[in-house]
Length: 181
Image: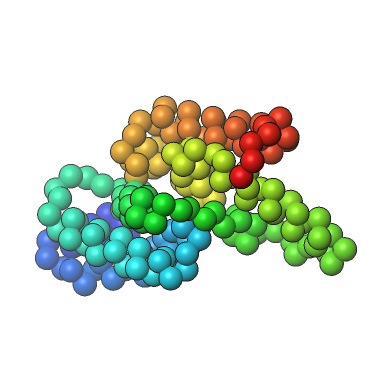
């Protein structure tokens, strides 16, 4: 399989078939990310396809250096935000199924369902720009530099959003916040 830099160079030099490697490598992770942002499985298929179509068209035209992975996630984030603006809702899917953990005991399952609902409700209260940065960092494993490049903001802004989002989550989750859903 080709390296990201090779894919970019080959596509720009007219070998459009090389883009298939990028789709193969990033389609599932991008779809999972979009699902966590939108909570809408049907929309995810379209948003994922739109992400790769836009990336392909833009890759041919742009001459600037890009980090393919971060660039694709940036496009996907913009697609999800556009979708949200259109729908005016953002359902957040629990991170539990995407994190590798041991399956819960049956006795423990009721407690976990309650905790899951509390986590989801709390995450919905985190400002969107902070939630996006938190997802990219904690779930997708992006470094601050990659998030900054993907979102077109500074590393300091990313660091601040992740820190503030984490603090806000802790504050709200521990019960010191009394907002209703």
